Picture 1 (cartoon, rainbow over the protein chains, first blue to last red):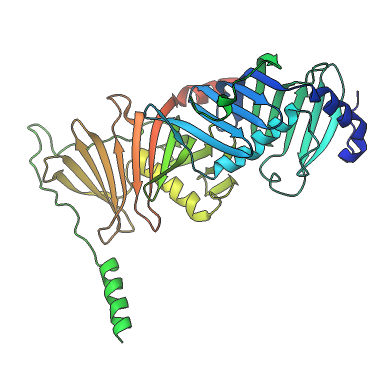
Picture 2: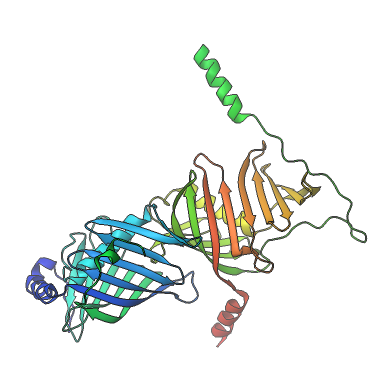
Amino acid sequence: MLAVLLPYGAWGDDFARVRRDAAELKTVQARFVQKKQMKILAKPRVAEGRFFYAAPDSFRWEYLKPLKAIIISSRGETRRYIMSGGNMIEDKSGSVQAMRLVLSEIANWMSGRFDRNPSFKAVFKEGKDTLITLIPVEGNMAGMIARIEISVAGKSMAVKSVRIIESEDSLTMIDFSNVELNKSINESLFQDVE
Amino acid sequence: MKGISLLLLTALIFTSCRSLPVINPVLPPAGMKEVVCPAPFLKESVRLIHAIEFRLAGENRGAVIGITVADPATRSVSCAIMTVEGLVLFEAESFPSLKVKRALAPFNTEDFARNMINDIRLIFFTPEGDIQERGTLSDGAHTCRWREKGGARIDVVARQPAGIEINKYKECGYRQRRIRLNGPEGNIYQRIELAAEETFNYSLLMTLIEAVPLAGEQNREKTGNAK
């Protein structure tokens, strides 16, 4: 099927359907493997972790190896913690804000809101799995990310994989596995580090 | 007038030079022409990946991943900084001239790029210039002092069991950088501490994740290209 590049307003029906399908999605939990490819790296750098999402906008993005790090977001507040000297300490660098933009987007995508962020133009391509390409328009994301490709499982509309293309030389691939939908998640996971 | 005097006094305090730590000459061991200098520097091209915790003005600010490709033969450096999540914040290379390939705020200043490349060279490459003094400091630590063309001095100090310290002093004696390499023997870059004394002081704690010598990779590339 041909990808059609149109302003996302023209895709009202598609996004409405995706949103309708995803509206039934209350929680998602999954494992993920993240592979970072860069020219400066001879082979992709692999990180593994787990992801929790609860509608409408709570998430926990947790790296288990090789480095332990956690981003938790709930009620509009995002915090990041890193392992240092055996303890998780809060990261107060500006890069938290950059990651908040990206991860908040993933939370939006989990609930089918691919067209919510005006910083992106969305392109919709249906197939066995639905592929949604987000291209930054002028704004915060332009210059930071070239495009984002999201593969969504056909029936459940849960996100299967994400490819974040920063430039010709830099690509991040995130594959989700062991996906469990609408299973109860303790609220404290979105509040506490432990 | 009083205000001007105060200003001049303040300027004098901040610009007056300091004396460098005294290095006491020692006789070289029997059979050797001169005292051997500590040499914690790279001998071959390598790719290093470090987890880097950084502090600004003493406050813990965060952590990033640092990738360094350094070749001591050409003194060339390629480097990148990315978040733990993989977002590239900064990427630059020094050869043939400084080229910043990507820089997101707050890493998007030319000073930052130049300082970063210089810090990497200070950590991993033998100082440029001549060895000016060899001997021991007052605490007995073996030390060699290089003098660079611009007048800066670099002391390389071996302290057992604490590890190796690299101190860079401006021409007039102010210490600009203090680097401590205290990884285990054979893995000197396992843990690197860097303290920078600038307008805004900062410090880095670098913990090695991966070190890969590049000779093998380069040979493989050549073999691949020959096919």
